[in-house]
Length: 371
Image (cartoon, rainbow, N blue to C red; front, side, top):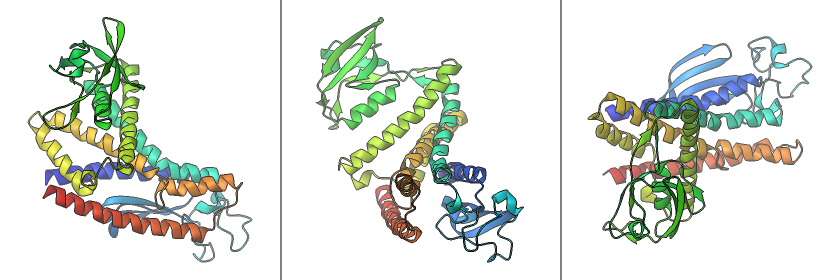
């Protein structure tokens, strides 16, 4: 039960912040927001404030920021009996509008760059949320330095002369800032030869390491990280917080690449149920260390999920923010000529149906893995 409550709190925070990005940029651009909701499905609670209805819905996954004319349809002032402009019509530029023309407060009536900013704001706000959460974690316990604590006997690192205390600064063409990048690089490049540059006593050394398989079948270079965390000054905290977000964005993109390339199977994909299970396991593992470490681990999960959601929403797939951005940038390329709204709406509808099918598959896969 605790894991479910924690998961709901984390999901709610991430979704609200995502939709808040759309909401704030829509308001800034003079677009009417008809409904702002947390959750999906039947409405449990709702309250009308000004032009917007704020709702809490039954299913605790997802949310929405429904803007006037977002899908190409809109309610004219005449159809609404004069109520489509809840505030002074001039505030939305309603004057001098020809009959049948989209009202100036609708999504489609705004400039293409205003619409791009509104659509892109959701994922960007996810990255902003991840950054602020990272500030708290790194400000509290610091960042993990890429320093070795041990070199394993019989593996390439020992044979190349690496020692405990060495600081890794580069692996092949990738610069290393935190130790998790070392672990992730080895994980994503299993079995590959790696050129490692490390620093010792202020001097840099470069060695070529051939991985060898361990007892569990994974490929190892033969060193272990220290887990040392260093608390820096304000500028370092800001820098490593931004780098934390970059790390998770990069990790998500690489994971997607492995999925597309067939290096990751269906059993490795987690949906909402799998995430709830992971949150529960993380909670149980950190509970013995005290409430503060439970709090830090939940924040760390939130950073991962928020950054991942931002990346996933920017994918150029129908029904996602990235898919909508594709059509908007096509409009820019075509110098203001819009794609037929009905055709675009059909593409997004088909995409939404496919996403629902994928969600059902992922949830089935979650239950199967758990059982």
